[in-house]
Length: 568
Image (cartoon, rainbow, N blue to C red; front, side, top):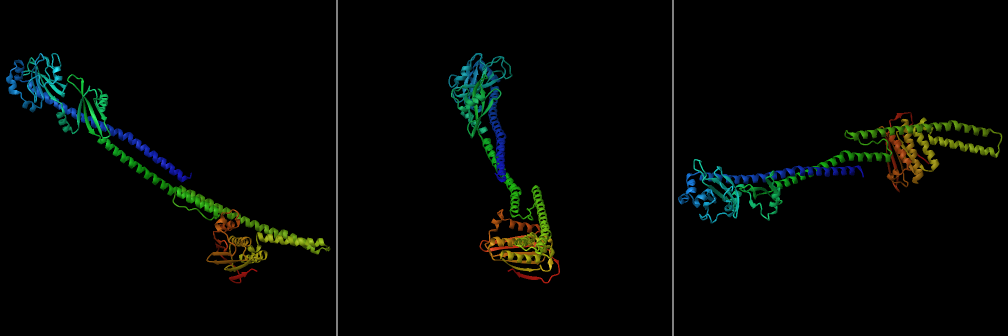
């Protein structure tokens, strides 16, 4: 796996991890927060309803105070005069007080009078059975001579919960003894619950605590309500939840379960908020990942790929004068500069090797010419002056002549001395004649600006070697019977062109072939002196090699500027 895909994989893993971490964080922070707010809202709504029920109790308590602390009421419980009832009690009075029941109870627990709103004034008719069962001597519902304050609570009846307040009947001055008990009650029936529901704008339900088949949500709430948590919040569906509270009866025992339903607005809002935040996180993380990858790809990976491609091209082409691109100012710039420094060192080293190679060739050529050549020449002279003239002596002279010629050719191939002594043009003219005589390939040569000029040793050596290698390739590979060489020096540039109409080749294929050392050697030599080389070859159409070298001419005495030579 390359670096690009590795970085992309790391970014994708980081993206997924970031989304997971943020999503889990949101779920663990926001969801509990919204759930707590939802539960708090449910508890608050239940408390509002309980507050309204407390207002009902206070209203009844005020009413019972008004009726139980009147001399007329005190006298009535003692005398049982019917005039009091006719003057003070009627359905309109009870309706005006929003009272469903008013009962006068004697100290012995007898019902002296019971008034039922909308019913008959007979204690035996419409009187709640659940309340009648509690009216007996010693019951907490009845006031004794020691009780001075009213008490209130719920009584379970056949018509539902009845909120009752019982108070002792006293004189208006508050003096006793207690004449009996006055009980005022108000049903928490559907009408009353609807009235309270309208106030709080929430549906209300009251079910008996001991009911056998409670709905599942009531059963769950029954288990959730404790002394420490008297109000419980239970989710009934994805869209609804309810708050539950336990309503004790007049004696402090659990009697009813109050349900206050509400929509799960906070829950839906939390889901929307989580959806928006998750979407924003995903989009933000995705944008961050894409921008990070694009930035890395453009600023790092693309430059690394470009750097690797340039280094590969330099290595394949062998052009040590080429340099990798240096842009920006960062760590990759430092790497590029170091590579360019290495290439410069390699170029200098290659240049030095070429110089050493030419120097060694020059030295060996001189040794062959001056030392071995002289010895062989002396040997031949001795053979020529010898008095003996036999067949063996003739054979020895022939071998000496052959050896002298081979040494001379080897010396000239290594480095012609006329290149150093006479200059580039004489060396080329001599080489063309010798090349034609050895290979039979004619050389058509034309030049301008070389006859009266000398160039630096590096330029002259490079020019000579390039032309020598090009003509050698013509003789070995092209199959052409002739070749043309043109040299032109103008404006500080020495241009050399070698052409043939031979077999040709595919230049790119030849350069990638490690066996093509001649073409690589030409390119390296040209690059070392800061020149350029262009090779244009088409199979079946021939080859053209154009070399341009930076060359400052040094004028010398000559006979003319233009020469045209045809080897034959």
